[in-house]
Image (cartoon, rainbow, N blue to C red; front, top):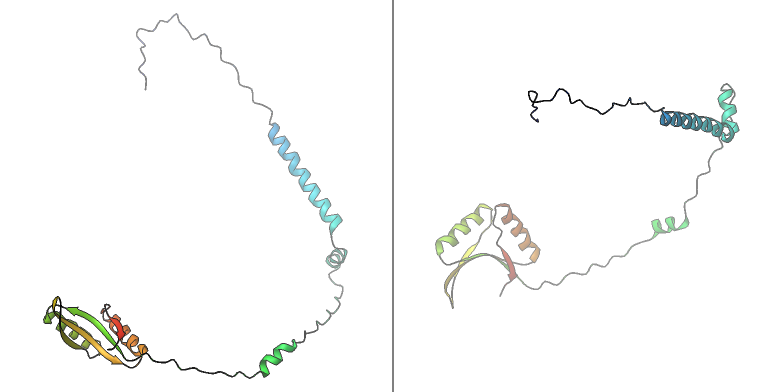
Amino acid sequence: MAQHDFINKDPNKRNTKKKQATKKPFPYIALILSILLIGGFAYGLWYIKHNADPKLVELQANPNTKKSAPEPIAKPRPPEFIQEIKDHEVQVKIKEIEQKGPYVMQCGSFRTEKQAETLKAKIAFAGLISEIRKTNGKNGVWYKVRLGPYKSKRQAESDKNKLKRVNVVSCGIWGWT
């Protein structure tokens, strides 16, 4: 807020601006709005009067008059093709899928036998039997945890889903050689 210096103020100087009285303008907007509102209401009544259904007006004026019985609606007859579909005999030929051979599921490959034994125990808690195979490769000794062989891939997928429930998710299914 600005500081005012009342001590050094010259009492001879006065505010020379004249204050003008503010006129309140005539509420033209309210007048126009009320005319439009009344005109719209009158037009709506006129529209309803000239576009009303005479039957409904007469029914509302005399509610005690008897209504005529509604005409029964004829049921549509079903198309002919529906009966043909019901009578049709379906011949299904089931083609057996050839199996590509036995499958094996490998869930891990480790450098130490202790890690492989830990995974084997985890698989045993899921109710499945696994085996550890020791292989000598170019990079040294590997301990592989495997399940199988399975006759179909579906059986291997079923066991893989059982293992996922106990958080063993690193299993792969391959053809057994």
